[in-house]
Amino acid sequence: TMAHSKALLVLENFIGGKFVTCSSYIDSYNPSTGDVYCRVPDSGKEEVEAAVKAAKDAFPIWSSKSPLERSRILNKLADLIEHDLEAFAQAESKDQGKTITFARTVDIPRAVYNFRFFASSILHHTTECTEMATMGCVHYTSRAPVGVAGLISPWNLPLYLLTWKIAPAIACGNTVVAKPSEMTSVTAWMMCKLLEKAGVPHGVVNVVFGTGAKTGEALVCHPDVPLISFTGSTLTAQRITEKSAPHCKRLSLELGGKNPAIIFDDADLTQCIPMTLRSSFANQGEICLCTSRIFVQRGIYSEFLKRFVAEAKKWKVGNPSDPTVDVGALISEEHLEKVRSYVKKAQAEGARVLCGEGVDSLTLPAGNQKGYFMLPTVIAEVKDESCCMQEEIFGPVTCVVAFDTEEEVIKRANSVKYGLAATVWSSNVGRVHRVAQRLQAGLVWTNCWLVRDLNLPFGGMKASGIGREGAKDSYEFFTEVKTITIKH
Ligand code: NAD
Image (tube, rainbow, N blue to C red; front, top):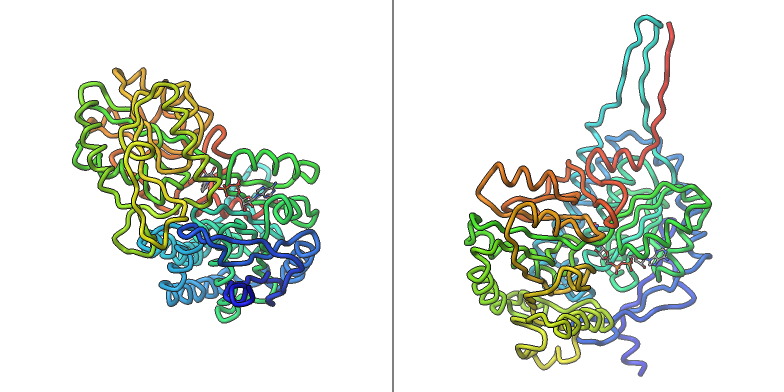
């Protein structure tokens, strides 16, 4: 009906400092109700072309500004987002299905911090210099922005991950064309409304909305976009690598994970259990760093399982806008079905589902009956070869298995195609060092999870990615280095 369509939120692309309507649109769902509530531009080659042109035109002026000038603008933008933190958090929760608490305490504060962090770090880089006295030469390196950066981000941490790319890209003097996930575009659009006030010149940040196959691919294939920073699935990364190969583009790929937690019998379970629940179920398990394989040493296996399952059952699933809720809705109906199908496969293979999906009943508020909800699910006695132990599920499902020795658990933890993150729990310092050194993972947390210093490298090994992001790593990715030699 007209009344219904009038109520829909309609997004527009942001190109050259202006909001521009698109010829066609995609429906976007509210995951907690199952209703279409927003229309997202279905951009194609034409829109991407216009955005790349705007970014190219803005490059000479933006790249010639001093780091301090750019830093001031990034800080201003951080302040403006922070000023609207509650509105951003509400929008992220509604669009993505995540709890309002998570959006308020993690997503939006981190988006703000991403701009502040790179506003600061860009002021402190130094380049290298060496002397070759016998030749009468000094060598030094100089770094310059690359040009138009293509930024593609996923739906799980929408504004958080998009700004983790936009901030370093523009801090370094590049201009950008960004494409958020078509399922979670609202907060990026809200941010566009603040750019002018922050002093970001027209064309420095352009956002084109749409699907991966159409909008994303047009960006990846555009000859005037020399670098692509992508966060998403390993499958999409393979496609992007193929499509960008003819242009020899520089790629940064942050991909999936199948992250182990290794819990030795000398672990402090009073810390380990609540943190491993968080690392398994936070954001509905939709974080690339979430734990999905828990290896527990035999001596504490049954005690761990008992306490872990009892605590998992206390996680409240329901309306994401209720601040007492711990688990919101999954991103889409298709994704919910996919996550559920893993639980069914595990059962068919003889594993035991100890709580959650198919075991406990889920009661939802009247307004959320058609939402994409699922209970935190713990599965035990899953075989290492099972798809539940090998593939990324990306939902509130975690597998718990027993192990005997250090040597054995390292081997089993490494026997997946992914290598993003791992956690190790033990009070033996020698052991955590030994194990951390041998785990194939870009990040190893011992006796904690998700504690990040943005200065240090972030990224995955094996099928979890190529490249690292962080203060120095992002600076290196978003700039081109030149070695200059001077002879007296
Ligand atoms: P996805 O790969 O389906 O999509 C990611 C983005 O790529 C979206 O914007 C999508 O529209 C776009 N895209 C899809 N096909 C494309 C194509 N052919 N060309 C260009 N762009 C294309 O991933 P998703 O389902 O949105 O996100 C979940 C995945 O992201 C999980 O695998 C998760 O582990 C991963 N992830 C990784 C990190 C990390 O830092 N390593 C962080 C968050 C999420």
